[in-house]
Length: 232
Image (tube, rainbow, N blue to C red; front, side, top):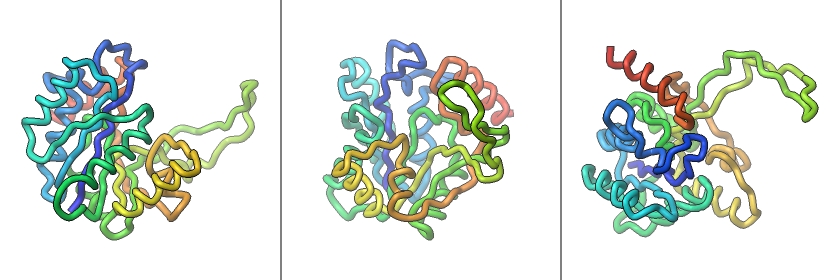
C-alpha cells in the first residue's frame, strides 16, 4: 500500500494570484481537484494528505476541505514555510493515522495537474522494487553552466541530464529517515529525491512532457493546450 502527500502550501507569488494557486481552475476544475481525481482512483493508494497554506484565509481553507470531502481518505492539514517543511509535516500526519502505516509514500505537487494514472502507477511499481524513484524527463536543449558574470563555464553533457518531476515515491521509513537527517543537520532541498540521494541511490522513471509544473499564467495556457491535445 502507498500513502500520498500533496504539497499545496505555496504562496503562488509567481502566479500573481490572490488565492492559493492550486485552487485556480484549468478547464473548469481546480489544479488540486485534477490531482485528487487521478490519485484517488488508483487502488494502491490509501490515505492522501493535502498540505494547505499554513495561514490560509478561511475561505481558502473551506475550499480545501470542501474539495477533500468529495474523495474518500483525503485529509487536509496545514503545511509549513517551505515545501520540505510541508512534506515533513505530512509524514507526521500520516504516522498519526490509525492502522498500519503504508510501506510507500508518494509525493506529488498540486501544481502538476496533468499527471496521469499511468505515470503514477509506473512510479509506484518501480518504488516497490527499488525503494526510491522520481519521475523525470530527458533534457533536450544544450545546457550551459554560467558564471555570475554571465560567462559560459562549460557545456554539460546533455545525455546525462534529466529534469525531475513528481510523483516521487519512496519507502516510508527511508523518507522519514531522510527528513530527520535534514532537520537535524539543517539541510534544505527543493525536492525529496535530493534528500534521499545523500542516503542511497534514487532511480529515474521516464516522465511525461505534459506533466508540467504550473507556476505562471503562461503555464496555465500551455496546460490548456496539453489538455486539449490529451482530450482529442
